[in-house]
Length: 484
Image (tube, rainbow, N blue to C red; front, side, top):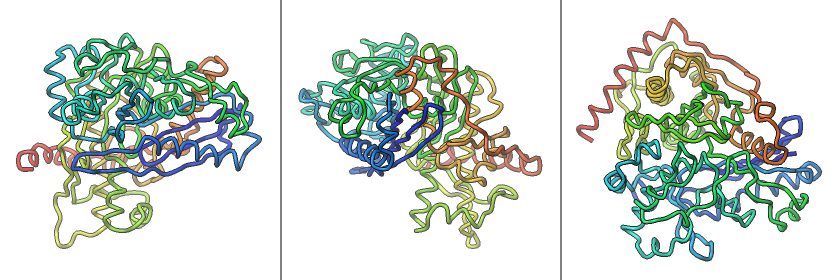
């Protein structure tokens, strides 16, 4: 048996996977976000640990025999979060998360201090990344900055609490702006630009390597053996790729989670910062990946559901499984700013085209289409960087909706495939990495592709209308940027 833990933004998922690769059981615990000021997004690091251990408690309670057979554990996590630890290993402040936009000025300063940033890190300086957050802390909370002994990412903090070891994998480390992504090692030059050095960083391993052994107290708590290994793991999107079997150059998927991602595997470090495409290490040695990132994907629908005081699923039911054409309303899904292609933390969401006769269904459809149009922006950016993407698997909470999947196919103009276990992809990928660390097997034998449950192809009857709607939608951001 193998255990995968995904430390997400809204919750933690735990998945128990058998030797045959089947999901035996899952458990989940919710997490709370804090927004103490505009553009700020923070979480209590200890809440990740409580949620992760609580989820495993649930599995151990319901499936004690299976949990006792666990040989390897893998971790997946939300990327970029700055978890600042003092000499005693305790957090100095709440973690500053990936969707926090406070450090825009520090991004400008970081690029000024380090002209070689793009070549080394492969990415633009964006407020979501970790390094600008540390410059912000140094400027606004100097007393805390002076006490920083280690900077960990969210899953690395959970690993530390579970094992006593401070270790990070290459894929997650690539999202800090401190990693030499091509050489897969910390960059003293980039660290120095933020007033840090390699001593402030955890040890690096590949995602499929052993990083540590589960602490005895937890092994006893869950009835496991004393030698359970913990893999390096992966950032959430790289872990989803492992869960989807996306381990060959050219493999691609679209994630409609809290944030949205268009992801493609590459066999080399292929940065494209001019279009705000991310170039990161993959979770397996010798592989990298490119990503286009939307900061509010399923989060946009969740926001609308909250405003309308209805469950998101209930909003979708009246629309059925197909749209006859684009909504007359346009929606910009920039509720927390945007990364690809705009790199604009200050970008804001908007509805355009509202009239007295506008109904709820048109607004809901506009939100789904706005996210799909943003995904098309991402697809275009990746295609320009490394060639066309001809099909994608669909994962994340948004993959549950056939309507949304069909809209994505119609807007993107390529087949979109809903896959088995698409909602637990990151946790499944983490469990697979735990298995690789425990057994040393060939990744190609473990990281198999899931069964496709349904395929959605572009419909000739609506694709032309969606092409026109997308072109009009693209005019909104620059127009509103001038006045917002």
